[in-house]
Image (cartoon, rainbow, N blue to C red; front, side, top):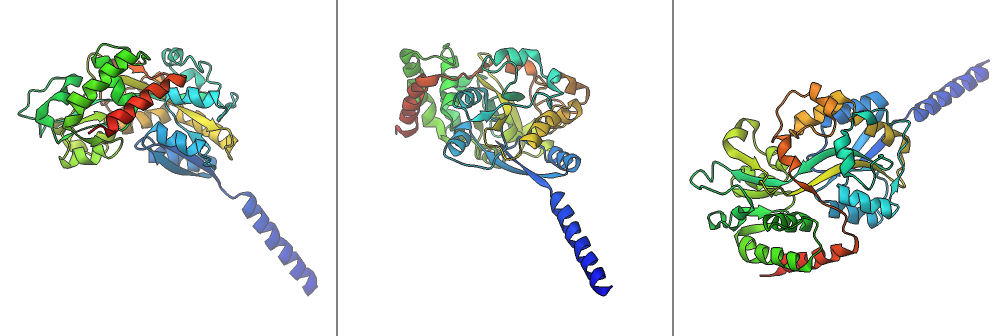
Length: 347
């Protein structure tokens, strides 16, 4: 009898351990931009789907793409900009989405989808947000400077030693192109050379460096008075009580570079089903409103979320509409790469 009892006890313990292992939480591996993921939404998703979310971040699409292309494994979801989504689709780096899980697809603004000619049916990518870079001025430091509200501000010597632009070629060259009146996606060698000469001779002498991420901290500390970049990087570092007196963010009338970042599942994603659930979860209007509220984006991707938004956006949506999406330039991207090397390393 004792032996039978021991055997039963052992069986119960083994069964308990098996059940515990069977219910072990899954982990979703998310690779996203810095300052782009509300922690509260990750926590909510973890609780609802009995899982963990591990977040890694990158500061440019070039960084993300190089890491994945270089063989990095284990990530489920990446959130590239539209030009990189196009590239990754062509190169077979993404897995088709499970459309049966995408019950919130009707929440996506059709105006946004019309711009995404590489995947208008969301076969591989679901828009996360339309974002645009612009110009950020530290009003407290520039209070005595009557500065122009266009890209010529980077040639203003009164900002010399206190200015920065993004360490991303399509961004910097794109700003110069639109300032010159050219198409942001031009492949004309003459136009590109003209824009490059202006960057090297007029803008670069005033820049401390090209900086894709750290400029937010330097802006908040007062070292940088003038930045080109994503506004959330600055807003995320400055005390909200000081936003009004410190930050002047604007997109010049001529527009500038814009992107639609989209949620994509990598081809070898280890948690495909959970990844699909996450994408759909983000676009529940009440959830998407949390994203908008936390980062202050204009709400143009999921219009139903406007019913739940409680805070004003960092800038008016109309400003972003004047911008141009960066397109996949294919082999012509080499022209930009060559000029960017010249810009970065010319003394």
